[in-house]
Amino acid sequence: MYAIVESGGKQYQVEKDAVIRVEKIAAEPGSEVVFDKVLMTGGDSCHVGTPYLKDVLVKGQVVAQGRGPKVLVFKRRRRKDSKCLHGHRQDYTAVRITSIDA
Picture 1 (tube, rainbow, N blue to C red):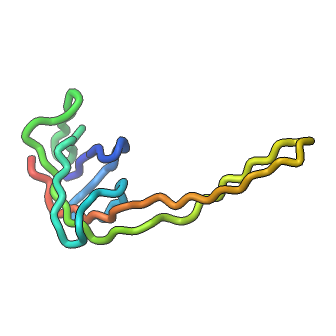
Picture 2 (picture 1 turned 180 degrees about the vertical axis):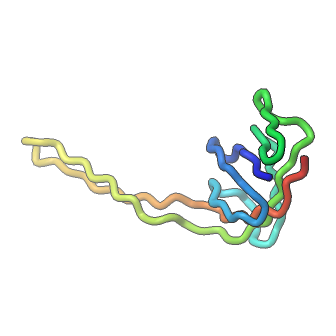
């Protein structure tokens, strides 16, 4: 069985025991998080929400908090002798899915 959940404005397809990286959630490693915005469940039978499914929860456990790889943004303006280099690292939370309660 799988589910599609929404977290941080993005959608993730999750299964039991899968580890996903979502936008940073204020939770300590080892604590439980609940995703209540479930868009769809699938497997033997498929259920689609409008926009979310009622009475369906996806539970997970926070594995780690971290930062992603550095992304370099380089801007150069031709003939102006102007250039700018910026770096960015996105914060994330790694979550292991423990159950999909339908």
